[in-house]
Image (cartoon, rainbow, N blue to C red):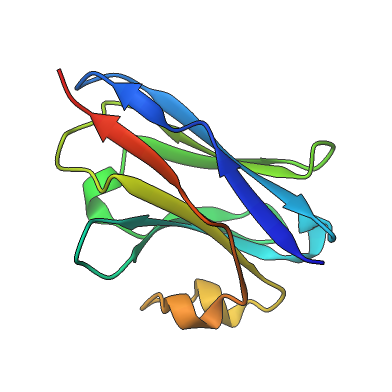
Length: 127
């Protein structure tokens, strides 16, 4: 069964850093496009960063440019989202998603184009 599991969330002070992990089961990420999404209560999830099967990455949100970095570890079958300079205004819930096609990486980012989703991990930025 295809499955994505996020981890690495928790409580962090403003300006701090966290690295979120997205580990795949049932398939290898080598052949999939991966996206990280942020979601706030009562709002739709929005694209944060994406990475292609070839390793090319991009930040979809202007608010995270220079702060968030997406990367992969094919040996561990894991995608990471390094989050620096965290702000309370950042969405608290982060989800990873995968799809074998490349269409899902084309702006504007549409979450419905990703076929496999993790359940999310929560990050609370507070002093």
